[in-house]
Amino acid sequence: MLSNIKAAIFDIDGTLLDSNGVWQQIDIDFMKERNMTHPDNLQNWLDGLSFNQVAEFFHENFNTKETPEELVEIWHNMAYDAYKNKIKAKKGAKELLKHLKENNIKIAIVTSNSHELIEAGLKNNDLYDYIDLVITADSLSTNKDTPYIFEETARRLDVEPENIIAFDDLCPVIKAINEANIRSVAVYDKRSIKAYGEELMRDTADYFINDFTEVLA
Image 1 (tube, rainbow, N blue to C red):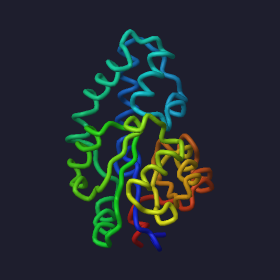
Image 2 (image 1 turned 45 degrees about the vertical axis):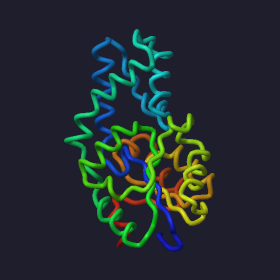
Image 3 (image 1 turned 45 degrees about the horizontal axis):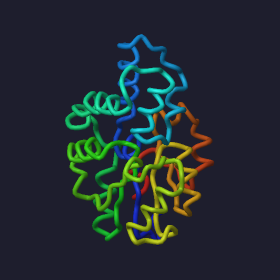
C-alpha cells in the first residue's frame, strides 16, 4: 500500500479522529433547541462541505436567525471541549504517523473542519508534531469533494500525485482523491458505513481498511 509513497494525506473527522459522533450530536442538540426537524439524511447533504458552507446551508435551508458567521462560532464553541479533552484517535493512527515520519514521508491534513479544532484534537492525542501541512477547505474557498484541494495539497507538499496516498471516510471525497490521481484509502467509520455501505466504499477506493493497523501489517 505504501510502496513508492513520498507523502500521505489524512482527513480528520471519522478518519484520524473518532469525532463524527460529536458533530452528529451537535446537529441534534442545536436543532432541538430551535425546534427544528432533524432530517435523517442531513449528513449526506453536508458531506464534503467546508465549515463555512455548512453554516450557509443551515442559514438558507433552515432559516436560522443567526448569520452563518454566528453559526460557525456557536458550533465551534460546542465542539471545542470535546476536541481538546475527549475525542480519541482511531486505532493505529499514532503508530502509522510515527512510521511515516521515521521514513521521511510527508504528512498533510486536508479537512472541512477549522484549524483551531484540528489543532486541539491532534494535540489531545499527541499527533500534532507529526503533521507537516494543514489545509482546510475554507482556506482555499472550496469543497473537499473536488480534486482541486488535493491537487493544491500535492503542489504545496512538492510531491507528484502518483507518489501520494490519501485516507478519508467519505465516498464523495474519495472520488475527488481518485480524480486528482492520488492513491485512495477508504477508512471504516460507523457513520460512513451507515451512509454509503461498505461495498460502495470498497468499490470507490483503491484500498479499504478497518483501522490503521492494517496499513503496517
